[in-house]
Length: 62
Image (cartoon, rainbow, N blue to C red; front, side, top):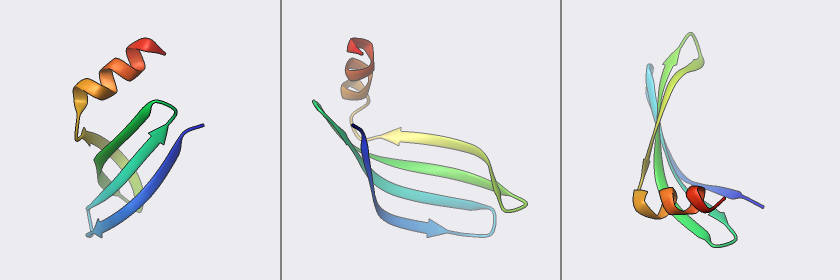
């Protein structure tokens, strides 16, 4: 089971940033999700992981 915990949020008119922790069995990662907002909806999203090599290894084994 994957669990995402939102730790902090920054919001503006056109962009938002969400700092979160994602956990699953054998996986623990902090990340920042950057969002571009258009007409009140998410138009684009970028994920920046604290440890990208750990994320890549986790998904390669899945």
